[in-house]
Image (cartoon, rainbow, N blue to C red; front, side):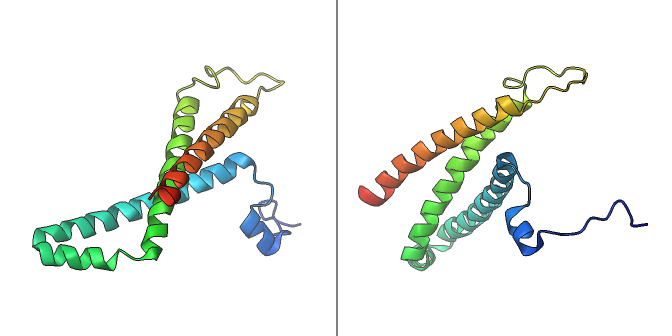
Length: 145
């Protein structure tokens, strides 16, 4: 008899990339984690570059010359995109975790109530809000400067 705790990977590499039966919330969770790691990485790099100012104007000019290319311009855009997504999703998570969206905890009595009907619309609203911020920021970043 097969071990009941082991399951076949029927999805292969497609399942690794796509997550199988992941819902929209799981993708939001994964992207929230990735943007958080990206923002921490940017923060550390920013501290390193800014701290070069303590070594004089020449050191500062050298560092600024190293980070003034078009790749870094696109990188700054990605940092702002990450910040917008991370902030909007973080506000949604705060509203959910403090119970403003799903209400107070209840005893689980069959038929079970799901909070998915309350959380998913909030996720969609927050992502629309994030998209509006991204469009406004992108217009300002790419068209006005």
